[in-house]
Amino acid sequence: MSKEESSPKKNVKKEAKSFLLQSPKGMHDILPQVMPLWDKVREEARQIADFYGFAKIETPILEAEELFHRGTGETTDIVEKEMYIVKTKGGDRLALRPEFTPSMIRAYLQHGMHRLPQPQRFYSTGPVFRHERPQAGRYRQHHQINFEIIGGESNPVSDAQVIIVFYRLMEELKLKPLLVQINSIGCRICRPNYRKKLVEYYRSQPVCRDCERRLKINPLRLLDCKKEKCEEFKAGAPSILDSVCSLCRNHLKQVLEFLEEVNLPYTVNHLLVRGLDYYSRTVFEIFLEEKDLALAGGGRYDYLAEVIGGRPTTAVGGAMGIERVVEIIKETQPNALKERIKPKIFLVHIGDLAKKKSLSLTEEFRQNNIPVINVLGKDSLSQQLEAADRMNSPLALILGQREVYENSIIIRDMDSGAQESVPLRNIIEEVKRRLKG
Ligand code: HAM
Image (cartoon, rainbow, N blue to C red; front, side, top):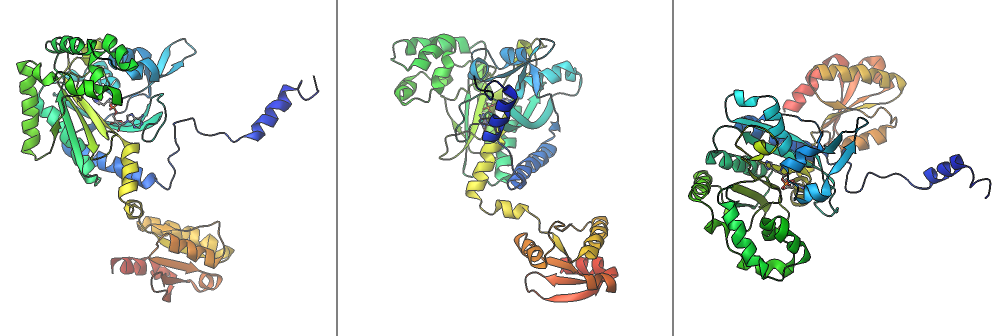
């Protein structure tokens, strides 16, 4: 063995130099260049939440693994294959949340929120972790905006409101044309009948490998298969809408009527089942026409509270993926990013004295609520003016050695290039006047 091979310290040093560490696969940095779009989506969501009375709630990113086993469902892809598990020093098994819904209902139950006026409306946003195969629009860390209505009666108006809230949010974000797909997957009384019919039908079909498994563990998911081979079997499958009980049928009918009341276009898709176990009655997804990936999805989950050990509690909600929405905005609204960046007054300094002075001047502008920007690390006049141009600043204020001695400042209109010297004590008023004009 050579001396180098025998020294682990040296080997570590060598390896560390040879590659640059990257963010984990399927998890991305959100860089300052696109952050204005992320902020826009979150701000619109916040405003919509305020308008429709959804209160913001935050829950831990880590939850007991069991919450998702019981809540999301043992047979879902999420629980079977996609959870990130952390083993704590004390021996507990926690999961990085793969979705918000079980946490929302856990928090509602844990804090006795059934004692508050019903239903309670919640809004939440943050990262979600699923160990999926990364591909376009499908990441291992993605971010969601969730709206949930929990408690009270299993009222179809709440199902409609959740759909309306997501639809209006997407309209505000200028996503169009939107396609709302909706279905009812029945309740615990009528669904078993349908499941039986479906299994009977599928038993004789030469379905794909995955579907053979679905047939055994979660037959409804057969309708969700994306393989070409299974398309014709799906097309011939019995429709759940012919099997739901009169209560579920009536529930769906009313949801649709409420949507019609606000002129919200929808399509009933009897193949829509969603990949999570807790839904009952309404399920929905919202797409951008001609795109395969859903931007938002959700539904009613009246049994989830009981499944995680709580009192019977009705609930309905949904989630929108921020990454997918931001990607579409970037693709279809090339000016959206520019529109979000509010041009600021650019403060240019020449020389050390001016640099020092520009610090106190910046504070003065802040006190007057006028956004200014300066690049204190750059000292050349041309570089600073170039930066002002790039940032679309309407005005540049130039502070040179001479100006500092004379207590004046040059104000430059960045469009025309016209410059004028103004006494320093008048600069705030002068800028205000020009901004108004
Ligand atoms: P979901 O359909 O699994 O539902 O996710 C909601 C949305 O999150 C999707 O429509 C999509 O935009 C985005 N999304 C999901 N997975 C990924 C991924 N791997 N990469 C990027 N974006 C993704 C739920 O999570 C339910 N908890 C929704 C809900 C709330 N149901 C009732 N209340």
